[in-house]
Amino acid sequence: MVKSINTKIDLTGNATWFRGIASYGKMMIGDKAFEFYNERNIGDYVQIPWNEVTYVVADVHFRGKYIPRFEFQTKKNGTFIFSTRDNKKSLRAIRNYVPANNMRRALSFRQKLKQRSRDLVQSIKNIFTHKK
Image 1 (cartoon, one colour):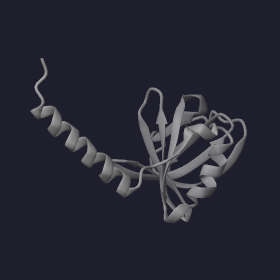
Image 2 (tube, rainbow, N blue to C red; image 1 turned 60 degrees about the vertical axis):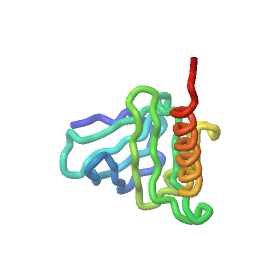
Image 3 (cartoon, rainbow, N blue to C red; image 1 turned 90 degrees about the vertical axis):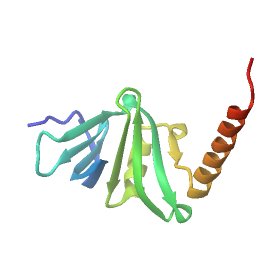
């Protein structure tokens, strides 16, 4: 059995962990970490301490009316993508432990398209410019 590292729990609820195949379970937001436990497989869990989180990126649509998912970017272990029943409520609970300048909004579709087209043009320019 996995032991929680939190001493005080702020929010619990159902959640989905997206990692290739979706994993369904329970999440806990507490004073020490964000924790996710799979409903069916006890060994399938993740505990993300707050001091390990570099950014929390929320995928925001319709000017904040709909938030389908959010992700944790950590210092050592990469990114973890989650979705809960009420993502806005979860992000408000996370905001108590992660500084406001580390909470980010994901790029919109238009911003991604603009960035990729700019990168494509730059790579084409690099191909045809001769460097000595």
